[in-house]
Image (cartoon, rainbow, N blue to C red; front, side, top):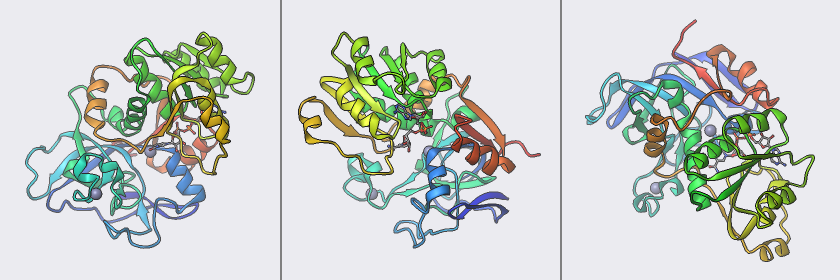
Length: 350
Ligand SMILES: NC(=O)c1ccc[n+]([C@@H]2O[C@H](COP(=O)([O-])OP(=O)(O)OC[C@H]3O[C@@H](n4cnc5c(N)ncnc54)[C@H](O)[C@@H]3O)[C@@H](O)[C@H]2O)c1
Ligand SMILES: [Zn+2]
Ligand SMILES: [Zn+2]
């Protein structure tokens, strides 16, 4: 079968590998679509980061590995003991394999499992391939009417869903989202669905335009305006009820702390690749609650249900490319910010 195999920095090879087979408690999928995300770019240009050069403690897997963690697939084989899925079911993959036994796994916070293995980075098969094998609990059946393309978006939308939950806001309130990439856009759509007004800040005119088209109440250009002043102006001087850093730049942290109202919530979802200096004065004076987002936790079923109800239109921000285009049309174009969410089409063969 075809697979995109990561050997190391700037060394991803599209090659033929053996098909994986489902063991006990596992499910074999024919991959339909697999999204490329910022973490893949980071692994490609700056890695190894999430992949390993020594065996992973849970799976024993090390590089080379098949990439791909945002995927939908069709069930083609069931391993021993799997009886609650059927051949032909369409599923979205929750890319976390966890130990199932530690403090966090047994208290519902499995996303904090210390030996967590990420599909597409630390498991023996990944989503950028014709077939992949996952544990039964990693496969979430898509609701009727949810397409395979939509299915490949459930993973990034689950990050956005968890981030929005951590904002602790309700209908009628205002959230400032810094960064209108796929995560910021997912948060915008989720917040709108909950009746929350959204201010989106992004230096890209194209991304601000998209945010408006998808329902942002206001957009701000952080290059032309001080986003803190703009957010305060739009909220009667108070600041937003919550703010989300989906940008990953130091300026967004400043905007979170000062653009959020007293007792509001400042949520960091972006992965910063360098330490950010926060003068303690900037923590004590704003009196906001600062928190983070560790992927997702029990979000897939809710996101799939919302997707089935039409919460997440794909227009204007999702495109597909063929398998052969992964490096040039996928990774390199995303780095130049020429696309938004790029899904690799594995369902169609040339
Ligand atoms: N916490 C988690 O579990 C988790 C999971 C997935 C992704 N992430 C992270 O979430 C972040 C967002 O992901 P994405 O795929 O949407 O990334 P992206 O790179 O597509 O989007 C980032 C956006 O921020 C904008 N930006 C740059 N400077 C800005 C500024 N000063 N103010 C406002 N916006 C600014 C960029 O123009 C871009 O549109 C990334 O850092 C990613 O690594 C975190
Ligand atoms: Zn991702
Ligand atoms: Zn665990």
